[in-house]
Length: 159
Image 1: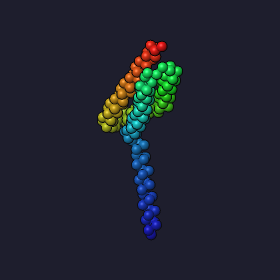
Image 2: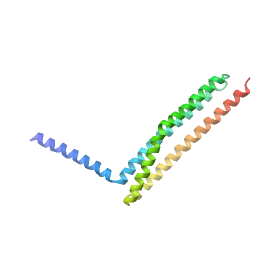
Image 3: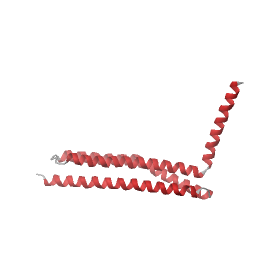
Image 4: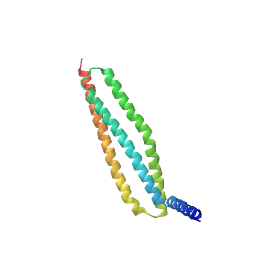
């Protein structure tokens, strides 16, 4: 008797879990929210990685100040630039895919005429967060670029 009760309880839990998954798959708002969370997560990973790479360039430029070996400077900065390009090439396709999926999900929400009010604040919050991250990355890359140019100029002045 106890075995049958335990089996029935497990069967009910599995059925309830499967029902919830089906309900989420049929709910375009929940699907759009999940896609938005994935987009924000992937974009944050991209921004964090590129920001770290830009900060490494700035640190390398500081370490190379006063260096007279143009080959070492060139090699170090080229390696750093290649790292940024490789990281961006690796992480950007996921963000682009998430963005395309979000557009599709938002079109599904619009056609279902449900939940538009639920998504608007989430979309605004995500947009604000991602804009701040983009601005931080842009500033760090610009700073690293200026520092590298100053280092190159100092090398040209040295004999």
